[in-house]
Image (cartoon, rainbow, N blue to C red; front, side, top):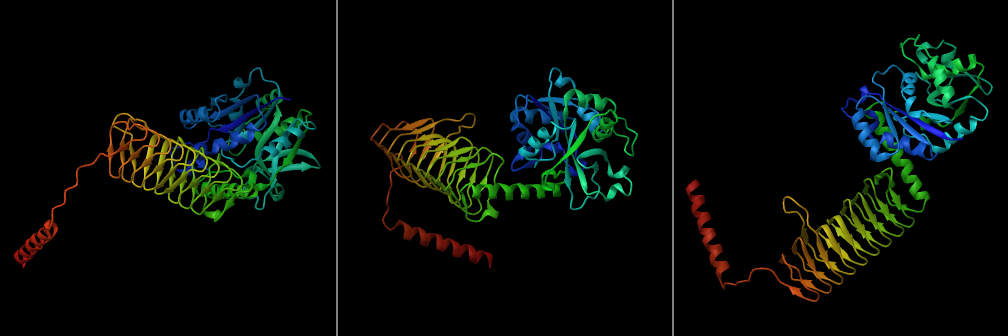
Length: 451
């Protein structure tokens, strides 16, 4: 049976107090919407439809990067969840199969939970995801009889007896597409909020002689985000789960609670991550690497046996080959560092390539920007770059060459050459003593004038 996803992402999120659409607020440095998409994409859906409203243009731009095949539709008026799902009708024309309705602000739903909902469809026309709440509070309640789901009642419309039920509604629904829209057409808004509730389709289905059931999951999966405080709690939950998974996969985290990961972080087994390391989006670290304390990585690839840090920054486009060493207070951007090369101290390497086993001295800078355009620096194999060398791009240094410390290299250096580009040193005997005496006398005169 083929599957389609409908992800509801139209809410303004008033309690977030933000110009950014709620579903674009990040968890693990990825929009909440990305988490919902990832869970659904494990089902290999034939179609994915995102229903947007507030900030739809921004949501559309982000969605294009997350899933280029997903369609976006607009809910221009927020008239309830059934009304929101109805906006996906045209986008699902020609599709025949089951639809799963997800929420863009519910980031922790697991793929296996969605698979369980699909499996339950074999025995019921409508499947709803529920959870047993520790504190049911104001959740909608699932009214059941055995395995049958009789109806869903919103808290504000529930009787006192119904409010004692602890089985609560997550909002997720799985149903055949044609059946789903037939049921939605019958939904009214005669309720306390005057909205068209998707939850009403259960009772409507039963009145039509159809069957409904509930699948349950852990309450933590159903956490919805409606405020900054809830966003912070969700971030903590995500980080704890991601760290635990890495350790189970054979990664050593010396101080797990200090390491911050992104949704797409990939780290191989037997890698050691020291305290206070931040992984931004787009980082892959192969097995057996070492990321030392207080380093920040984003958009980069670190190969087996590499050592990074402490206090290193790897920016997007950085490619570290095997057994490279990037040391303290080094920044690398859009550069390829070949096998065994070292950039150990206080250097900036941007828009560059460094050949195998080359050594970059402390304080080296590739001067890659002329104020308008970026330019490339190419350093060959077995090159020694002396400390405090400025490499003014575009420039190349050939294999087995060397630059003298303090040089400003503005033209290409041929293989095997020594490049010296600094002013001639002049020593003046006794001049330092005379200068100090002159300065001290001037200071004494100035101090006397102030008294």
